[in-house]
Length: 244
Ligand code: BJW
Ligand code: ZN
Image (cartoon, rainbow, N blue to C red):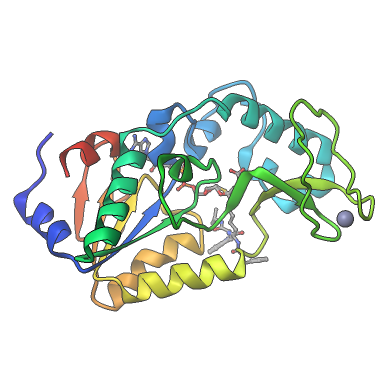
C-alpha cells in the first residue's frame, strides 16, 4: 500500500489532531460493522439492527433487544485490539510525552477496544456495551449480567436494566458530545477512521472541523466520498496505521 508523502507530511506536521473512529476500526479484530449486520451476515441477520439499536425497539420488545446485546457481548468478549487500535494508543501516548502534538480520540464504538489497547482518554460518543443502567432511574447496574437471558430488574426501583449505549432516538451523553465538538472545532487535522459517516450527530464533526480550517483525512477501504474530505486513504485501518 502507498500513501502520498503530502498526506504523511500533513499528519506529521499537524499540531492538534482529532481522530474519530467507527466500527471499521474494529473490523480487523473480528467485530462485525453495522453495515455488515445490515447486509444480513450472522446469526441475527433476520433482524434489522437499526430497529434493535433504537429506543423504540427496546420499548416494543425489550427481551429481544436484551438478548441481541447478550449475544453480541458473548461474541465480542474475547476480541482483542488490532494494529490500528494499538497504533492510535501509541501515537496518543507519545504525543502526551513529548508534547509536539495533541492527539484526541473520539469513538462511536461501544466495544471498549481502544481502552484495551491503552488509549486514554477516549471520548465515547455512543456509550459502552459492557456497562448497564436502569432505563427508569438511571442507576448503574453493577452486577454481572453474563449469561442472563431475561432483562434484569433494577435493584433500586425495579425498572428495566439496559445496556449503556446510545440508541437511535436518544441524545448523546452531554459531556462526551461537548468534548467532541470542542476538539473538532479546535483541531487542525481531523482523521475519520472506519466510519460510514451516516449517523448523526457524529457524522457532522468532520464538517465542523473543516469549517474552522482543519484538513480532513479519511481512512476507509470503501471511501465515503464525503464532500468535506480533503484526502482519502483507501485501505484497512490496521494496514494504514502500520505505515503511518
Ligand atoms: C473499515 C474497515 C477497515 C470496514 N478499516 N474501515 C436525519 C438527519 C440527521 C439526523 C437524523 C436524521 N434522521 C434521524 C436522525 C437521527 C439519528 C441518525 O443519525 N440517523 C441516521 C441513520 C440518519 N441519530 C440519532 O438518533 C442520534 N441521536 C440524536 O440525533 O439525538 C438527538 C435526538 C434526540 C431525540 C430525538 C431525536 C433526535 C443517536 C445515534 C446513536 C447511534 N447508535 C448506534 C448504536 C450503538 C449501540 C450498538 O452498537 O448497538 O451507534 S447505531 C450505529 O451506527 C452505532 C455506530 O456507532 C454508528 C455509526 O456507525 P459506523 O461506526 O459508521 O459503522 P458502519 O457500520 O456504518 O460503517 C463502517 C465503516 O467501516 C464502513 O464505511 C466500512 O467501509 C468501513 N470499514 N472495514 C477501516 N478494516
Ligand atoms: Zn432503577
